[in-house]
Image (cartoon, rainbow, N blue to C red; front, side, top):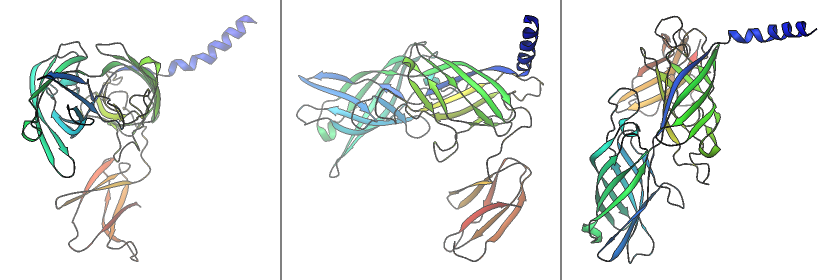
Length: 379
């Protein structure tokens, strides 16, 4: 009897051995920087400078404002004689915004790489509706390799309009980088995955599921996921679709094993009531697995892909150039149509084409008179 049970259990468990689980490396870093509030005493007066992106409290967040090196926030400067802090629009450049080793992590946000005496500049602007007060800022950055925190010395010059002395504040800044393991199993177009990510340079961990859908050999669509983060707090990772106007896909270079993208946490700091802080993160998945040796990582290798319902079209105008991007299944025949009025009786065909890839751009002639409406349909 016991032998029969043992054999039955072995038979039931045996098929699970065929599910291929792979380990890949995953890195991610918060695109925001946390900067402390600091005070300085000069000529017997105390001045305090803090920063915030929150509604009603100082959270120290500097956020990326242009996709590259320029960062912004609201600077709150306490000046003796004023009732409450003065609120300035604050913009400054970060140093080391390159990727010297090509690992898709900007050098400034890499804990292992030091920042030594680098200088940048910025501005502080107060617009009260009647006057515009313009100040200038220079910054000197230092952070030791292996440390998540460093110092940024801000030299603030508001002498021209506020007749203040030049003020020098030394703030602590902090970056957030995680590195660890993505464990995944491919099941057709679906990828069942989980993460175990450790904070670099300081205690902290993210764990949880990371479900994805394979759209092509170079694109992955992320589903929403629930993680546990530092202090065992619950985080929601928003999916690729719906978080912004554009899909936030994971995309692989044509000849690489790195998948790069960005994501939003629903709430970057769950312990506060304000959601929109420290919520945008960059990430990379580095998959060394290539079972058939065809230089396509196992994460997206094969023929089982799920295409978006579609076709999906996006129209972009740059100057006098009009481009229609069509996303659909490769090999699908689509018709691009237009008309000048949505109440018009019929659509006019612009062109018919068979898609050679899952996404193609169609150049359109901008209208010279009035509006144009466009649609894409399949045959």
